[in-house]
Length: 593
Image (spheres, rainbow, N blue to C red):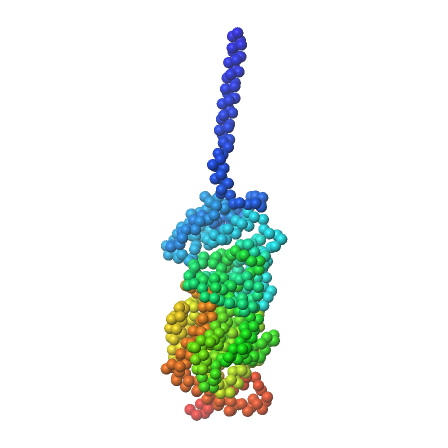
């Protein structure tokens, strides 16, 4: 009996020890999550019907790269709203490993920079749409049947090298021969329903800091209907780069808001709803569009479209003449695209043509008082290639001038010899974005009298553009007019006042709509007419008269010589006679002290 009790006691002790051991091990392994905890865990996940398998563990180098590109969970810059990162972590790095952001005094809201202790880890905070793109690309299989492609093999597009970084992320490099790369345009195919990021390599952020490209789903960039612009609201929206964007709901070309820089790259991201989308630095004005637009003016009363010659590649060189009496009334020459990649300027010239040839009582009255010679696209060959410079300084006789400068020179020589007036030239250019106001004057003529005339005109321009709601620059630059450009050449030979202007449709304080850009043309024309009818008109007329007399004297001396030798090159006639007359004057002064 005692033996049996002893065995039972040993058995119970062993069972108790086993039970305690199992309980201890179970407490170490954790318990099954309760329903509420399970629901919370699922809510943090991104719905992924086609989720990719988990990626392999990153290498040491990948971890180092990712650590430098941490998306900080929350960054508040001075005066800026709080930005939060979505629950997904594109870099697969725990939030606790992110270094703490420091907000330094004096850092503006528009810089959007997160400063962290290690200078090497200083990064530009990417917009939420870019974080969303990364998450979408990671969590959903890309559409391999309809991949995204980027093309620039069409007229007026800038030549590009395209690198595919991921299915929705591309890097492009502008590869024109020119050192100045102030234009890009390309087509994105396979874009419907996708968020796409594009980086422009080697960008000049100093000039592009307020740049917001435009995009459109138009079928053709040559069709007139693709650029119809209707009135929109006065509402301004602040873009991610801090620029204030006008309402573009009335036009087919919309601003891209999500823009930032990373190193030397200009980056932007946009969700597209259409399969084919055009993206450009600003609203494009193509060679074919120009030809179609000028053809549409054929039936307008008081408007003449004149073809002055052909380009080197056989494209028509066309200008528009509006006005009733070119011999009596002052004449304004207004032209665009001396630099063929500066598209803003063509829209301003088109706006001048549209307003002056319109049916308003003001336009009808002004056509009886002035003459306008307008050239919306000076260099069609250069524009077709998307380059910055080709014939810009070719208005000089050196054997390299080319057919374009010879054709324009011949037209204006015949214009003057026919007794028509030539009073003022407006040579329009556009900056890239961050260089200045909506318009400013970058150069002026030398000589006290001519500079005073230019200053008087500039004062009126500032007043009138400000009155119409634009933001003009107030300084008259000290740089001198270049005689080898069309406006300088005309001023030197025939006396009209040369006034170059830079236009900026993407000024940080307010980006312009296409309609506002065209309205600049009408303000230029009305202001010029006011100036030519104002108190300074007598001084300008006297200066022009002196230049005309000098020109007549040169032709009397050397015209017969050129005719005898069959020389008809207008540039050669004007430059050689001008140079010979200078030499003759110097010889006379040397012999008659």
